View 1 (cartoon, rainbow, N blue to C red):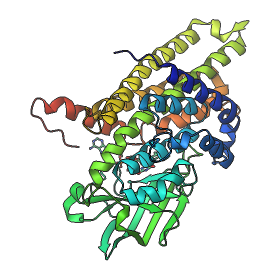
View 2 (view 1 turned 135 degrees about the vertical axis):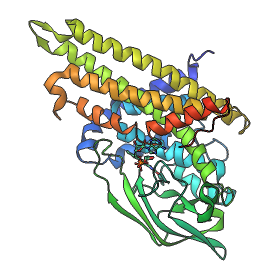
View 3 (view 1 turned 60 degrees about the vertical axis):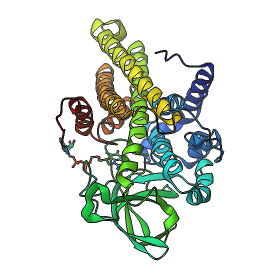
View 4 (view 1 turned 120 degrees about the vertical axis):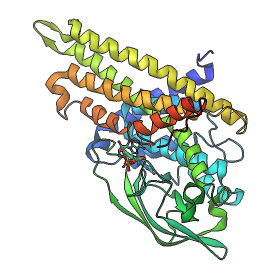
Length: 395
Ligand SMILES: Cc1cc2nc3c(=O)[nH]c(=O)nc-3n(C[C@H](O)[C@H](O)[C@H](O)COP(=O)(O)OP(=O)(O)OC[C@H]3O[C@@H](n4cnc5c(N)ncnc54)[C@H](O)[C@@H]3O)c2cc1C
Protein backbone atom coordinates (compact mmCIF):
# COMPACT_ATOMS: atom_id res chain seq x y z
CA UNK A 1 0.00 0.00 0.00
CA UNK A 2 1.42 3.35 -1.04
CA UNK A 3 0.18 6.32 0.95
CA UNK A 4 2.50 8.84 -0.70
CA UNK A 5 0.44 11.97 -1.25
CA UNK A 6 -0.35 12.73 -4.89
CA UNK A 7 0.91 16.06 -6.24
CA UNK A 8 -2.65 17.40 -5.92
CA UNK A 9 -2.84 16.30 -2.29
CA UNK A 10 0.56 17.86 -1.60
CA UNK A 11 -0.59 21.17 -3.11
CA UNK A 12 -3.79 21.03 -1.06
CA UNK A 13 -1.77 20.29 2.10
CA UNK A 14 0.43 23.31 1.48
CA UNK A 15 -2.62 25.50 0.91
CA UNK A 16 -4.27 24.22 4.11
CA UNK A 17 -1.11 24.76 6.17
CA UNK A 18 -0.61 28.27 4.74
CA UNK A 19 -4.18 29.18 5.64
CA UNK A 20 -3.81 27.69 9.11
CA UNK A 21 -0.54 29.48 9.92
CA UNK A 22 -1.60 32.81 8.40
CA UNK A 23 -5.29 33.00 9.29
CA UNK A 24 -6.13 30.48 12.02
CA UNK A 25 -3.05 30.88 14.24
CA UNK A 26 -3.65 34.58 14.85
CA UNK A 27 -7.18 34.06 16.26
CA UNK A 28 -6.73 30.71 18.06
CA UNK A 29 -6.01 32.19 21.49
CA UNK A 30 -8.82 34.71 21.16
CA UNK A 31 -11.26 31.93 20.12
CA UNK A 32 -10.38 30.03 23.29
CA UNK A 33 -10.51 32.98 25.67
CA UNK A 34 -13.61 34.62 24.17
CA UNK A 35 -15.23 31.19 23.53
CA UNK A 36 -15.97 32.16 19.94
CA UNK A 37 -14.23 31.40 16.68
CA UNK A 38 -14.43 34.77 14.87
CA UNK A 39 -17.11 34.83 12.16
CA UNK A 40 -14.63 36.45 9.78
CA UNK A 41 -12.37 33.40 10.02
CA UNK A 42 -15.26 31.07 9.14
CA UNK A 43 -16.07 33.36 6.21
CA UNK A 44 -12.49 33.13 4.99
CA UNK A 45 -12.60 29.33 5.43
CA UNK A 46 -15.79 29.29 3.36
CA UNK A 47 -14.07 31.43 0.73
CA UNK A 48 -11.35 28.77 0.45
CA UNK A 49 -14.01 26.09 -0.11
CA UNK A 50 -13.36 24.40 3.25
CA UNK A 51 -17.07 24.34 4.12
CA UNK A 52 -17.75 22.58 0.81
CA UNK A 53 -15.02 19.98 1.39
CA UNK A 54 -17.15 16.83 1.48
CA UNK A 55 -19.86 17.87 -1.00
CA UNK A 56 -19.60 16.56 -4.55
CA UNK A 57 -18.70 19.01 -7.33
CA UNK A 58 -21.81 17.85 -9.21
CA UNK A 59 -24.57 18.75 -8.58
CA UNK A 60 -23.72 20.82 -5.48
CA UNK A 61 -20.69 22.85 -6.53
CA UNK A 62 -18.77 21.31 -3.63
CA UNK A 63 -15.01 20.83 -3.41
CA UNK A 64 -15.44 17.04 -3.70
CA UNK A 65 -12.35 16.30 -1.60
CA UNK A 66 -11.31 12.70 -1.14
CA UNK A 67 -11.02 11.59 2.49
CA UNK A 68 -7.23 11.64 2.51
CA UNK A 69 -7.27 15.31 1.45
CA UNK A 70 -10.03 15.99 3.97
CA UNK A 71 -7.85 14.60 6.78
CA UNK A 72 -5.02 16.90 5.63
CA UNK A 73 -7.41 19.83 6.03
CA UNK A 74 -8.48 18.73 9.52
CA UNK A 75 -4.89 18.15 10.59
CA UNK A 76 -3.75 21.58 9.35
CA UNK A 77 -6.59 23.47 11.05
CA UNK A 78 -6.28 21.51 14.32
CA UNK A 79 -2.52 22.11 14.50
CA UNK A 80 -3.41 25.76 15.17
CA UNK A 81 -6.94 25.69 16.61
CA UNK A 82 -8.91 22.56 17.45
CA UNK A 83 -12.15 24.55 17.92
CA UNK A 84 -11.98 25.80 14.33
CA UNK A 85 -11.25 22.27 13.12
CA UNK A 86 -14.23 20.88 15.07
CA UNK A 87 -16.61 23.48 13.61
CA UNK A 88 -15.50 22.70 10.05
CA UNK A 89 -15.51 18.95 10.74
CA UNK A 90 -19.01 18.74 12.26
CA UNK A 91 -20.32 20.77 9.33
CA UNK A 92 -18.62 18.58 6.71
CA UNK A 93 -18.28 14.99 7.89
CA UNK A 94 -21.22 14.65 10.25
CA UNK A 95 -23.78 16.89 8.57
CA UNK A 96 -23.09 17.85 4.94
CA UNK A 97 -21.82 14.44 3.80
CA UNK A 98 -24.63 12.62 5.64
CA UNK A 99 -27.31 14.90 4.24
CA UNK A 100 -25.94 14.70 0.69
CA UNK A 101 -25.70 10.92 0.91
CA UNK A 102 -29.03 10.07 2.56
CA UNK A 103 -31.26 13.13 2.06
CA UNK A 104 -34.03 13.47 -0.53
CA UNK A 105 -33.24 15.29 -3.77
CA UNK A 106 -35.79 17.99 -2.90
CA UNK A 107 -34.33 18.74 0.56
CA UNK A 108 -30.77 18.58 -0.75
CA UNK A 109 -31.60 21.02 -3.58
CA UNK A 110 -33.23 23.36 -1.07
CA UNK A 111 -30.41 23.47 1.50
CA UNK A 112 -27.09 22.03 0.32
CA UNK A 113 -26.16 24.98 -1.93
CA UNK A 114 -26.26 27.25 1.14
CA UNK A 115 -24.21 24.78 3.17
CA UNK A 116 -21.57 24.61 0.47
CA UNK A 117 -21.10 28.40 0.46
CA UNK A 118 -21.00 28.46 4.25
CA UNK A 119 -24.19 30.52 4.47
CA UNK A 120 -25.64 27.70 6.55
CA UNK A 121 -23.37 25.76 8.90
CA UNK A 122 -24.42 22.22 9.76
CA UNK A 123 -24.80 20.60 13.20
CA UNK A 124 -25.42 16.98 14.21
CA UNK A 125 -27.83 16.39 17.08
CA UNK A 126 -27.85 12.78 18.25
CA UNK A 127 -26.94 12.92 21.96
CA UNK A 128 -29.52 13.57 24.69
CA UNK A 129 -29.28 13.89 28.45
CA UNK A 130 -30.21 10.21 28.90
CA UNK A 131 -28.81 8.91 25.60
CA UNK A 132 -25.04 9.31 25.20
CA UNK A 133 -23.03 6.16 24.49
CA UNK A 134 -26.35 4.40 23.97
CA UNK A 135 -28.35 6.49 21.50
CA UNK A 136 -30.85 3.70 20.76
CA UNK A 137 -33.52 4.98 23.14
CA UNK A 138 -34.01 8.62 22.25
CA UNK A 139 -36.66 10.66 24.01
CA UNK A 140 -36.97 13.10 21.13
CA UNK A 141 -40.02 11.97 19.21
CA UNK A 142 -41.04 12.62 15.60
CA UNK A 143 -44.65 11.87 14.76
CA UNK A 144 -46.19 11.84 11.34
CA UNK A 145 -48.69 14.63 10.82
CA UNK A 146 -50.28 15.01 7.38
CA UNK A 147 -47.57 15.84 4.85
CA UNK A 148 -44.83 16.16 7.42
CA UNK A 149 -43.46 15.32 10.87
CA UNK A 150 -43.62 17.12 14.19
CA UNK A 151 -40.55 16.88 16.43
CA UNK A 152 -40.58 17.30 20.21
CA UNK A 153 -37.69 16.79 22.61
CA UNK A 154 -34.30 18.08 23.72
CA UNK A 155 -30.73 17.50 22.56
CA UNK A 156 -27.48 18.04 24.41
CA UNK A 157 -23.89 18.46 23.30
CA UNK A 158 -24.69 19.94 19.91
CA UNK A 159 -21.42 21.28 18.49
CA UNK A 160 -22.09 24.34 16.28
CA UNK A 161 -25.30 24.85 18.30
CA UNK A 162 -26.46 28.40 17.67
CA UNK A 163 -23.97 28.87 14.82
CA UNK A 164 -25.68 26.36 12.58
CA UNK A 165 -28.29 27.16 9.96
CA UNK A 166 -29.25 23.53 9.59
CA UNK A 167 -29.55 20.76 12.18
CA UNK A 168 -29.44 17.04 11.47
CA UNK A 169 -31.69 15.72 14.23
CA UNK A 170 -32.22 12.13 15.28
CA UNK A 171 -35.59 11.23 16.78
CA UNK A 172 -37.70 8.17 17.52
CA UNK A 173 -40.50 7.58 15.03
CA UNK A 174 -41.29 4.25 16.70
CA UNK A 175 -40.08 4.50 20.32
CA UNK A 176 -40.92 0.88 21.11
CA UNK A 177 -38.61 -0.38 18.35
CA UNK A 178 -35.31 0.93 19.87
CA UNK A 179 -32.54 1.34 17.28
CA UNK A 180 -34.87 0.24 14.48
CA UNK A 181 -37.36 2.96 15.40
CA UNK A 182 -35.01 5.93 14.93
CA UNK A 183 -35.15 8.37 12.04
CA UNK A 184 -33.06 11.35 10.91
CA UNK A 185 -34.38 14.74 9.84
CA UNK A 186 -32.90 17.97 8.54
CA UNK A 187 -34.32 20.92 10.41
CA UNK A 188 -33.50 24.49 9.33
CA UNK A 189 -32.58 26.73 12.27
CA UNK A 190 -35.46 29.12 11.60
CA UNK A 191 -38.11 26.37 11.97
CA UNK A 192 -40.71 27.52 14.50
CA UNK A 193 -40.38 25.54 17.73
CA UNK A 194 -36.59 25.03 17.46
CA UNK A 195 -34.70 26.88 20.17
CA UNK A 196 -31.00 26.85 20.99
CA UNK A 197 -30.42 26.72 24.76
CA UNK A 198 -27.39 27.51 26.88
CA UNK A 199 -23.81 26.89 25.81
CA UNK A 200 -21.82 24.28 27.74
CA UNK A 201 -18.86 25.63 29.71
CA UNK A 202 -16.19 23.18 28.61
CA UNK A 203 -12.64 22.34 29.68
CA UNK A 204 -11.39 22.71 26.12
CA UNK A 205 -12.70 23.29 22.59
CA UNK A 206 -14.15 26.48 23.99
CA UNK A 207 -14.72 28.10 20.62
CA UNK A 208 -16.80 25.22 19.31
CA UNK A 209 -20.23 26.46 20.37
CA UNK A 210 -21.47 23.36 22.16
CA UNK A 211 -25.09 23.98 23.11
CA UNK A 212 -28.41 22.40 24.01
CA UNK A 213 -31.29 22.31 21.58
CA UNK A 214 -35.01 22.29 22.34
CA UNK A 215 -37.73 21.18 19.96
CA UNK A 216 -41.35 21.97 20.64
CA UNK A 217 -43.92 21.21 17.97
CA UNK A 218 -41.24 21.60 15.33
CA UNK A 219 -42.81 20.82 11.94
CA UNK A 220 -40.77 19.69 8.94
CA UNK A 221 -41.99 18.46 5.54
CA UNK A 222 -41.71 14.72 4.83
CA UNK A 223 -38.96 15.44 2.28
CA UNK A 224 -36.72 16.41 5.25
CA UNK A 225 -36.59 12.77 6.39
CA UNK A 226 -33.26 11.11 5.50
CA UNK A 227 -33.63 7.63 4.03
CA UNK A 228 -36.75 5.84 5.23
CA UNK A 229 -38.42 5.85 8.64
CA UNK A 230 -36.34 3.57 10.88
CA UNK A 231 -33.06 4.24 8.99
CA UNK A 232 -31.84 6.77 11.55
CA UNK A 233 -29.52 4.52 13.54
CA UNK A 234 -27.86 3.12 10.40
CA UNK A 235 -27.42 6.70 9.11
CA UNK A 236 -25.94 7.85 12.45
CA UNK A 237 -23.41 4.98 12.40
CA UNK A 238 -22.47 5.78 8.81
CA UNK A 239 -21.95 9.45 9.77
CA UNK A 240 -19.85 8.43 12.78
CA UNK A 241 -17.59 6.19 10.67
CA UNK A 242 -16.72 9.20 8.51
CA UNK A 243 -16.64 11.42 11.59
CA UNK A 244 -14.13 9.23 13.41
CA UNK A 245 -11.71 9.39 10.49
CA UNK A 246 -11.93 13.21 10.63
CA UNK A 247 -11.60 13.37 14.41
CA UNK A 248 -8.49 11.16 14.17
CA UNK A 249 -6.98 13.77 11.88
CA UNK A 250 -7.96 16.50 14.35
CA UNK A 251 -6.10 14.55 17.07
CA UNK A 252 -3.09 14.21 14.78
CA UNK A 253 -3.10 17.97 14.14
CA UNK A 254 -3.42 18.85 17.83
CA UNK A 255 -0.47 16.57 18.67
CA UNK A 256 1.65 17.91 15.83
CA UNK A 257 0.94 21.51 16.85
CA UNK A 258 1.84 20.68 20.45
CA UNK A 259 5.11 19.01 19.44
CA UNK A 260 6.09 22.04 17.32
CA UNK A 261 5.56 24.23 20.37
CA UNK A 262 7.53 21.82 22.55
CA UNK A 263 10.50 21.89 20.16
CA UNK A 264 10.38 25.70 20.02
CA UNK A 265 10.25 26.04 23.80
CA UNK A 266 13.08 23.51 24.25
CA UNK A 267 15.29 25.68 22.06
CA UNK A 268 14.36 28.96 23.79
CA UNK A 269 14.42 28.04 27.47
CA UNK A 270 17.80 27.61 29.14
CA UNK A 271 18.56 26.08 32.53
CA UNK A 272 21.93 25.03 33.98
CA UNK A 273 23.63 27.12 31.29
CA UNK A 274 22.16 25.36 28.26
CA UNK A 275 18.89 25.12 26.32
CA UNK A 276 16.66 22.48 27.93
CA UNK A 277 16.53 20.80 24.48
CA UNK A 278 20.15 19.77 25.12
CA UNK A 279 19.01 17.60 28.05
CA UNK A 280 18.37 13.95 27.27
CA UNK A 281 15.19 13.83 29.37
CA UNK A 282 13.64 16.57 27.20
CA UNK A 283 14.92 14.92 24.03
CA UNK A 284 13.21 11.69 25.10
CA UNK A 285 9.86 13.49 25.48
CA UNK A 286 10.24 15.00 22.01
CA UNK A 287 11.37 11.75 20.42
CA UNK A 288 8.55 9.71 21.97
CA UNK A 289 5.99 12.30 20.88
CA UNK A 290 7.32 12.29 17.31
CA UNK A 291 7.17 8.47 17.24
CA UNK A 292 3.57 8.37 18.49
CA UNK A 293 2.58 11.01 15.95
CA UNK A 294 4.21 9.05 13.12
CA UNK A 295 2.32 5.88 14.09
CA UNK A 296 -0.95 7.84 14.33
CA UNK A 297 -0.38 9.39 10.91
CA UNK A 298 -0.38 6.00 9.19
CA UNK A 299 -3.52 4.88 11.00
CA UNK A 300 -5.27 8.06 9.83
CA UNK A 301 -4.04 7.64 6.24
CA UNK A 302 -5.15 3.99 6.20
CA UNK A 303 -8.62 4.72 7.57
CA UNK A 304 -9.03 7.64 5.13
CA UNK A 305 -7.86 5.48 2.24
CA UNK A 306 -10.41 2.80 3.16
CA UNK A 307 -13.12 5.48 3.43
CA UNK A 308 -12.21 6.63 -0.07
CA UNK A 309 -12.49 3.06 -1.38
CA UNK A 310 -15.92 2.68 0.23
CA UNK A 311 -17.26 6.01 -1.08
CA UNK A 312 -15.83 5.40 -4.55
CA UNK A 313 -17.63 2.08 -4.76
CA UNK A 314 -20.96 3.80 -4.05
CA UNK A 315 -21.43 1.97 -0.76
CA UNK A 316 -20.24 -1.30 -2.28
CA UNK A 317 -16.72 -0.85 -0.88
CA UNK A 318 -15.33 -2.58 2.16
CA UNK A 319 -16.74 -1.10 5.37
CA UNK A 320 -14.18 0.92 7.34
CA UNK A 321 -15.95 0.91 10.72
CA UNK A 322 -13.17 -1.06 12.42
CA UNK A 323 -10.31 0.97 11.03
CA UNK A 324 -12.09 4.26 11.83
CA UNK A 325 -12.57 3.09 15.44
CA UNK A 326 -8.95 1.92 15.70
CA UNK A 327 -7.66 5.24 14.33
CA UNK A 328 -9.94 7.21 16.67
CA UNK A 329 -9.02 5.17 19.76
CA UNK A 330 -5.28 5.43 19.12
CA UNK A 331 -5.03 9.02 17.92
CA UNK A 332 -7.21 10.53 20.64
CA UNK A 333 -5.17 8.82 23.36
CA UNK A 334 -1.98 9.76 21.56
CA UNK A 335 -3.03 13.45 21.42
CA UNK A 336 -3.77 13.43 25.16
CA UNK A 337 -0.38 11.82 25.88
CA UNK A 338 1.62 14.05 23.55
CA UNK A 339 0.04 17.28 24.83
CA UNK A 340 0.67 16.10 28.41
CA UNK A 341 4.34 15.51 27.57
CA UNK A 342 4.63 18.93 25.94
CA UNK A 343 3.20 20.59 29.06
CA UNK A 344 6.02 18.84 30.94
CA UNK A 345 8.60 20.14 28.46
CA UNK A 346 7.30 23.67 29.20
CA UNK A 347 7.64 23.18 32.98
CA UNK A 348 5.61 25.76 34.92
CA UNK A 349 5.13 27.78 31.74
CA UNK A 350 3.00 24.89 30.50
CA UNK A 351 0.49 25.53 33.25
CA UNK A 352 -0.26 29.18 32.56
CA UNK A 353 -2.42 30.73 29.90
CA UNK A 354 0.44 32.88 28.54
CA UNK A 355 1.61 29.86 26.51
CA UNK A 356 -0.70 28.07 24.08
CA UNK A 357 0.33 24.59 25.19
CA UNK A 358 -2.24 24.45 28.01
CA UNK A 359 -4.97 25.04 25.39
CA UNK A 360 -3.69 22.08 23.36
CA UNK A 361 -3.76 19.93 26.50
CA UNK A 362 -7.37 20.90 27.30
CA UNK A 363 -8.54 20.54 23.69
CA UNK A 364 -6.94 17.10 23.29
CA UNK A 365 -8.83 15.70 26.27
CA UNK A 366 -12.18 16.08 24.51
CA UNK A 367 -11.12 13.85 21.63
CA UNK A 368 -11.36 10.72 23.80
CA UNK A 369 -15.03 11.60 24.38
CA UNK A 370 -16.49 12.98 21.15
CA UNK A 371 -18.06 10.73 18.51
CA UNK A 372 -17.99 7.74 20.83
CA UNK A 373 -15.79 7.45 23.92
CA UNK A 374 -12.67 5.27 23.91
CA UNK A 375 -14.70 2.52 25.62
CA UNK A 376 -17.21 2.57 22.75
CA UNK A 377 -14.36 2.34 20.20
CA UNK A 378 -13.04 -0.69 22.10
CA UNK A 379 -16.49 -2.31 21.93
CA UNK A 380 -16.65 -1.71 18.16
CA UNK A 381 -13.13 -3.11 17.66
CA UNK A 382 -13.68 -6.13 19.92
CA UNK A 383 -17.03 -6.75 18.20
CA UNK A 384 -15.25 -7.06 14.85
CA UNK A 385 -12.54 -9.33 16.28
CA UNK A 386 -14.88 -11.69 18.11
CA UNK A 387 -17.58 -11.92 15.44
CA UNK A 388 -15.35 -14.41 13.64
CA UNK A 389 -15.35 -16.76 16.65
CA UNK A 390 -19.06 -16.60 17.33
CA UNK A 391 -19.03 -14.17 20.29
CA UNK A 392 -21.51 -11.31 20.06
CA UNK A 393 -20.08 -8.28 21.85
CA UNK A 394 -22.78 -6.35 23.70
CA UNK A 395 -22.20 -2.85 25.02
C1 LIG B 1 -16.61 18.29 23.09
C2 LIG B 1 -17.80 17.43 22.77
C3 LIG B 1 -18.53 17.67 21.60
C4 LIG B 1 -19.65 16.88 21.30
N1 LIG B 1 -20.37 17.14 20.16
C5 LIG B 1 -21.47 16.40 19.88
C6 LIG B 1 -22.28 16.70 18.73
O1 LIG B 1 -21.98 17.60 17.94
N2 LIG B 1 -23.41 15.97 18.55
C7 LIG B 1 -23.80 14.96 19.39
O2 LIG B 1 -24.83 14.33 19.14
N3 LIG B 1 -23.04 14.65 20.49
C8 LIG B 1 -21.90 15.35 20.75
N4 LIG B 1 -21.14 15.06 21.87
C9 LIG B 1 -21.59 14.03 22.80
C10 LIG B 1 -20.73 12.78 22.78
O3 LIG B 1 -20.98 12.04 21.62
C11 LIG B 1 -21.06 12.02 24.08
O4 LIG B 1 -20.52 12.80 25.15
C12 LIG B 1 -20.47 10.63 24.09
O5 LIG B 1 -21.12 9.83 23.13
C13 LIG B 1 -20.59 9.97 25.47
O6 LIG B 1 -21.88 10.07 25.99
P1 LIG B 1 -22.07 10.61 27.47
O7 LIG B 1 -21.33 11.88 27.59
O8 LIG B 1 -23.52 10.63 27.76
O9 LIG B 1 -21.35 9.56 28.39
P2 LIG B 1 -21.98 8.20 28.97
O10 LIG B 1 -22.58 7.41 27.85
O11 LIG B 1 -22.83 8.50 30.13
O12 LIG B 1 -20.67 7.44 29.46
C14 LIG B 1 -20.06 7.67 30.73
C15 LIG B 1 -18.87 6.72 30.84
O13 LIG B 1 -19.33 5.36 30.78
C16 LIG B 1 -18.66 4.66 29.75
N5 LIG B 1 -19.57 3.69 29.15
C17 LIG B 1 -20.84 3.88 28.71
N6 LIG B 1 -21.33 2.73 28.22
C18 LIG B 1 -20.35 1.79 28.35
C19 LIG B 1 -20.25 0.41 28.02
N7 LIG B 1 -21.25 -0.26 27.44
N8 LIG B 1 -19.10 -0.23 28.32
C20 LIG B 1 -18.06 0.43 28.87
N9 LIG B 1 -18.10 1.73 29.21
C21 LIG B 1 -19.23 2.41 28.94
C22 LIG B 1 -18.27 5.76 28.74
O14 LIG B 1 -17.19 5.34 27.92
C23 LIG B 1 -17.87 6.88 29.70
O15 LIG B 1 -16.58 6.66 30.17
C24 LIG B 1 -20.01 15.83 22.18
C25 LIG B 1 -19.27 15.59 23.34
C26 LIG B 1 -18.18 16.38 23.65
C27 LIG B 1 -17.41 16.09 24.91
